[in-house]
Image (cartoon, rainbow, N blue to C red; front, side, top):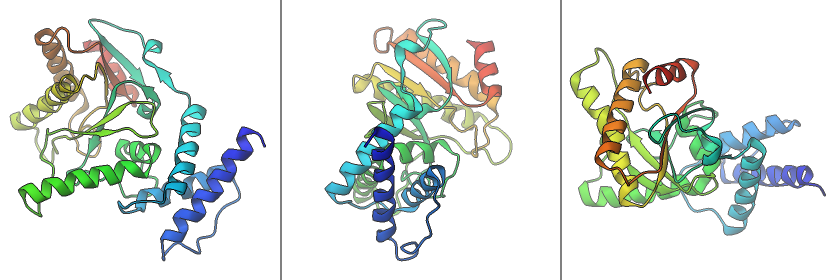
Amino acid sequence: MDKKEIQEKRLDYLIEKFKSESEEYKNLDIPNSIEGKRKVLRSLMNIRLPKPMPDNVLEVQDKYLKERAEEKGIVEISDIIVIKDKLSIWQGDITRLKVDAIVNAANSQMLGCFVPMHTCIDNQIHTFAGVQLREECNEQMKMLRNKYGSHYEQPTSVPMLTDAYNLPAKKVIHIVGPIVSGELTIEHEKELANCYKNTLDMCAENGLKSVAFCCISTGVFCFPNKRASQIALTTVKQWLIENPDKMDRVIFNVFKDEDKRYYEELI
C-alpha cells in the first residue's frame, strides 16, 4: 500500500474507535469522501471529553496526525523572514509552524473547543495535537482546582504550558485573553499586554527561544484588531529590549488580511 492508502486505513480505523466511545454517535453514517471522513473524525475528537485512550489507538492517531502535518506542509523557522529586531509576521495556519512554542487563545476552562469543526484557533490546535492535549490540560486544571477550589477557572493573562504532541512545534502556551463586551477599557489593554509579557516570561523560564503568537482576543473575544496589534508589538518590543538574550525569534501569526496589514504598518 502507498502512503495515501495507509492514511485512509488509519482514518477509517480512528473513526470507528472514536464512534465506539460514544453511545450517541456509535451508529453514525460515514461519508465516502476523504474530506467528509476527516470532518467526522475532527468532530468526534472535538466533542470527546478528556480521558485516557488505549495505547494502540493513540499510536494510530499519532501516525495519522504526523502524516497530516506533513500533508499540510511544515513551516520551518528558517522559512520565515525576519523583518526587524527578531520580529516576523507569518500569515497562515499556526499548526504548521515548527517553532519552540505556539500560543493558543484559550478559554478559562482550558480544555479546548468542544464545538465540532469550529474555526477558532483553540479547536484547530487541539485537533491536530491529538486527544492527549485535552487530557494534559485537564490534569493541570484538576491540580489547580485541588489547590484553589473546585470552581477554579484560569485567570486572564496567566499562561499554561503543555506539550504539543503531534504538532510540529515543541510546546503550546495556552492563555486566556481579555473579553471585551462593550467599551474597550484601560484594564482590557493592560490584560492584553500581560498576555504577551507573561507568555514571553514563560518562554524564557523554560528555555523556549522561538514563539509564534496568534492574535489574542481579536476573534470572539471582540478586542479591536488594530489596537490589539499596537499593544502586542509595543509589549513585545519592550520585552525584547529588557531581555536581549532570551529569545531568538518572535513571530506574529496572522490569519486575516486586516491583521497582516496592521502588523506590517506597525513593525
